[in-house]
Amino acid sequence: MTAADAPDEALREGVIALARQAAAAILAIYDTAFDVEHKADNSPLTAADLAAHRCIVEGLERLTPDIPVLSEESAEDVASATRRGWASLWLVDPLDGTREFVKRNGEFTVNIALVREGEPVFGVIQAPVTGQLWHGDRARGAFRRDEGAGDVRLRTRRPARAPLRVAASRSHRDARSDALMARIGEVEAVALGSSLKFCRLAEGGMDVYPRFGPTSEWDTAAGQAILEAAGGCVIDPRGRPLRYNQRDTLLNGDFVALGDADLPWRDWVG
Image 1 (cartoon, rainbow, N blue to C red):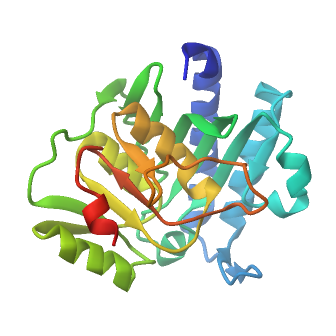
Image 2 (image 1 turned 90 degrees about the vertical axis):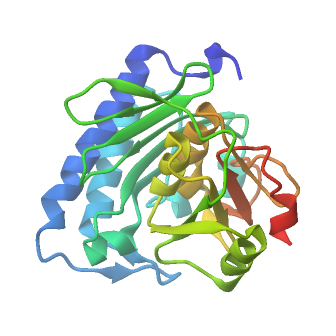
């Protein structure tokens, strides 16, 4: 990726502002007696998902009218043949971790990623409850921005040392992940929801995030962009980086996210 692939400062700050606005829309609903609906796949849906969706989509259409937006809450309205013709797109999860939102445990995020030719070149993740925000691209690096503070540059923990800190999904932990941790040996398992796992890897607070079973592309694109910018990687069981908008499905396969790409992950995947 070259610097030309990443957004300029004005666009970057514009997207960060949108993520903040979406977070405010989510928090306006968070402490109310909101209703929970369920989609066809039984995943939850709330008014906060839809409010954040409208905020981000309308904002991105103003900022970059020439780049289409694919959001979780409107993806079914776009034919796969249409979106696969897009060389660039915004990939958005307006509220990643709706289950955590419903539980009111604070572990949910806003995810916005810019994808070019299948590669996530820029990502923003906002945590509404804490106010923390992460952003990154490999041309400039990865950063955390606390509310009211400036950017702090991030690097993954390299080389990683035992015990490896393994991010375990808060709501989707499974037997294959447990078996992988057993093969690693000495580990410290840390349960965490949503795309916050990628952020902790980028900060060096965790080392490995295995995921077996389906996730959607909007769940991972922003986190991958930030983690790669911090020196890590997100790869499939054959060692290939995840790619986006390349297939009829928007579901990812199995993957492992690493802070240190030199870890013996092939011995663990099984």
